[in-house]
Length: 417
Image 1 (cartoon, rainbow, N blue to C red):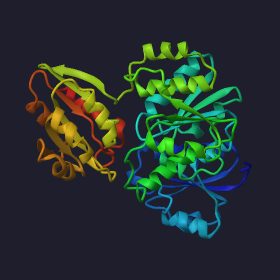
Image 2 (cartoon, rainbow, N blue to C red):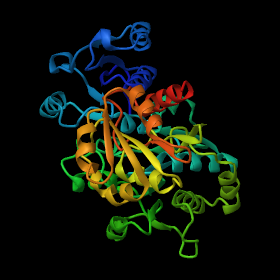
Image 3 (cartoon, rainbow, N blue to C red):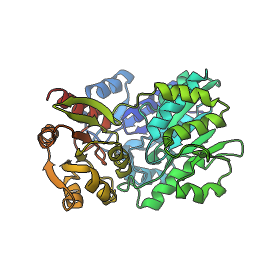
Image 4 (cartoon, rainbow, N blue to C red):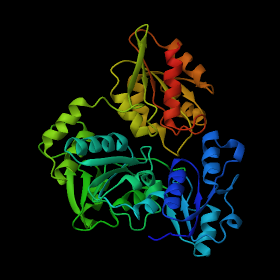
């Protein structure tokens, strides 16, 4: 895609927007930037980034007046596709690309893309490590933290990109085509953004949209939705787990082995990587023990199914801290598990009342709008042999910048108890 001297408006200045703007500048475009936050609400680092590049900027919203004359809009994943500015762009026939699709137009390398409701970050991390262990030049990026745009200048045709992909990113693809596309699972998520579960599933399935018979689709044998659409795919289907795998095998490991097999990498390389893997930060991360009580940071769990995974893996009675910004998820799917394993719930954030209304007939629930107070309250409810588990089921944006910020604060506060 030739964007030399084209005027590009980048909408949204989180990591993805900044990386897309830098890539556009590198490719010779003229760049404007727009953010919904006021200038004062932006961090000093973002303000310095704008000033250093001498960019024309709009603050406090996205207006069609500012975007007039643009040859292209590039949007961050957090910008809804039905935002007024994007409706204006479609009426004016101004092209709109998501950051991932924009970066893909300049990507010289094959891509392994991973999507699903749960496990994406773990599987993406492991695949990147397996590729590196097999001697390949691999870059881990996407929804996991580093935008694809940021790595484009470093890539060459011998590199591999391992890309964690969200439904928000898949909403805006056109030509995006991964060499290997992995669909891990699907459960309720982002129903505050998508109109219903069917739309959410449709967005997830777009990961296969442009694949050819030369590509691979890695699907979960135990996912009824995968079994339902597998026959419609043009790519070669690879199932995980294998039929001869042990039933208690970690499904994330099974998915990684399936990808390795599709890429001709020996399974022994995978086993070596698994042996050394200590898990991801903010995913079932042991923090410390105080008076016989274990404190576990599972801030990365932003769905009910992710919290199901966490609850199932606790072998002690649980004081459960959960809540945050609701994504339209039905928490009651965990009623039976809460009855079986949870001693008390500390409900936090905007979804606190919803958490209370869901579980109060099953287990005691305390409300707290202060995060430190919630942790101290959890400690007071716990006895030796219990665990305090932060596993929110919700997004973090009501109280924190992101789930990493929430997890770091949990560790800081617990460290000071």
